[in-house]
Length: 122
Image 1 (cartoon, rainbow, N blue to C red):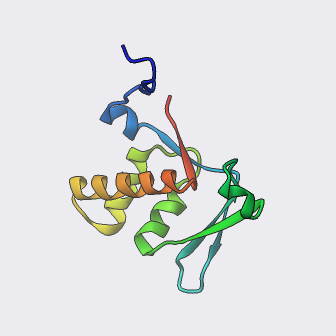
Image 2: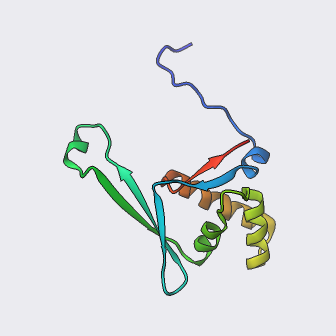
C-alpha cells in the first residue's frame, strides 16, 4: 500500500454509464444562433493557485457547437438518460447504433470535462 496514492474512484460499467442522466450545470447558459446552432457559455470561478491571483474573479468560456452537438445538447433536459439521447440521435440522423453511441458518449464526456454538464448516476 502506498501512503501517497490517490484513492481510485468507483468504476462504472457501460450499462450504468448509458443509464446516467446528463444535467446542465447552474453556471451554464446558452445562446441559439441564427443558423440554429448553439453557443454554450460557462462561468468559471478562478482557482486558488499563485497564478490565479492575476486572473479575474469570474471568467466566461464559450463553446460553439455544430449541428450534431446542438442536437445532443438540446436533448439534455435533466430527465433523459444517455441511452434515450442516443436513440433520438439514431432516429434523427439515421446512423448505426455503434457509431451513434461512440459519438454521443464522446461528446457528453467533452461537455463534462468543460464543466457544461454533470452526469447523475442512480
